[in-house]
Image 1 (cartoon, rainbow, N blue to C red):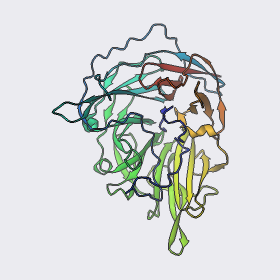
Image 2: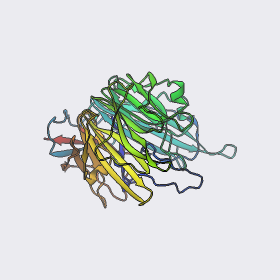
Image 3: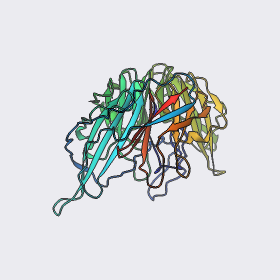
Image 4: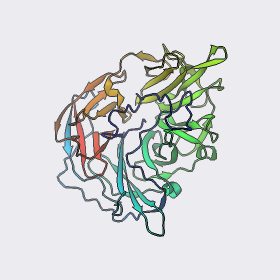
Length: 451
């Protein structure tokens, strides 16, 4: 499953998800640019300045649910034509609460899957004294909902040493054994992508178990983690931060390093996904341009089991001085791959987009909708985008078909409205519709689709 939460307002104007801007260089002295690098994952807005020294006490876990909430059923399976909003208010668990003080904050993230929704609430308290340096203490809880309106009380997450540094829950992926939650460190100072710090698995979204990672995974710089009905897959570099690596898992708990595509020399691995048709790696392979110079050609590799790979050169793919290729699921039966290419001679950045239903045969898409600059949310069954309106107002909600056809939905009811004074929000797609939650957890809206 693709990363299925999307933060708004603070990130307006930035291209995210599958359609991402290729970084041409680094503006900070001392940084170096590689020929291709993994796509960064959007980082939550708050950015604590110091590492954690202790965890907060979780406190009361009661979360009374208003008796006036309506009953909602599973969203229609066919074509959607509209969204009817339900404003539910503060039904999301309100604990833990950070200590009062400047710099203290709350961060909410929500994700959808085939059987419901999961959420995480992190409280950060900034503490300082005359005898102790500035530090933060943390607490993170998980919660779950079958319909997006009624949530379980928050449960403390087994964080171990994870909370000794800033970690946020960046995505939740659904695979054959259940859910896999991904905790990340923030982006590097020079703009490098956030790295995976820890993983948790859950069969139902309510009980989470910390994954004991193998040594080469734990010491590596893991940039992408994804899943689909075929299994779970991660990509990054080994401890040397140079050698590309791919890991696969059948259950999200036991991981092993997979062989790289052949020939492995010079191969760039940018990301990977899993879906009903197997696994797909995205990246580039070197191309001899003459006079000892090399360029890179966008490439995709397919595998039924994540161990042996068959290379596919997408139609129209051309070599370039720098190439970055992402691959994401639209649904469990359809993928989209995007190549961002940089030509050092013309100083031009170009983009190519392809879609596939089997991971082996790819079709070029010439002009994807501008709405696809936002992340495609998916619950494995369909894709949806939730896009902030330019200049404020209600968001645009649109469905995304397997061929990247975008259909904007009409809206009714009392939904989220963006303004200069409104709180930022995060969104997810689940079995009952589109969920939007303010990042302070005080407001929740459920958009129930109509057919």
